[in-house]
Length: 82
Image 1: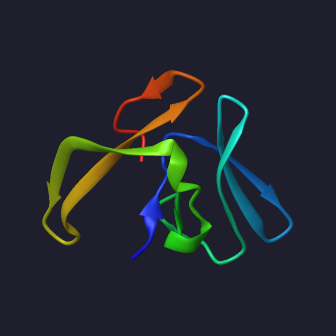
Image 2 (image 1 turned 180 degrees about the vertical axis):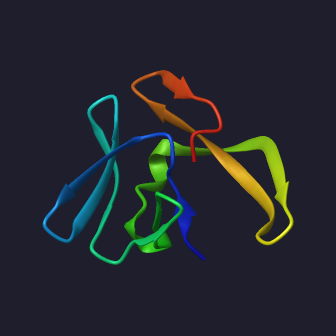
């Protein structure tokens, strides 16, 4: 399972993808998967201390039900960002 980070800043450094928000590195990996312009990071690439479970869910006919996380950095929250 990969974690999608669509609404965060994506920086490509060679083959390395990095997700950042508010100056914090949220995820970094050379093993991301790109689907429809979104980078999906493997679970071991995620800095879990920044992710809080959200009550937000969406349903896609081909991907199924998606659950989201809020991103929190230095007291700032980006609701449903991941």
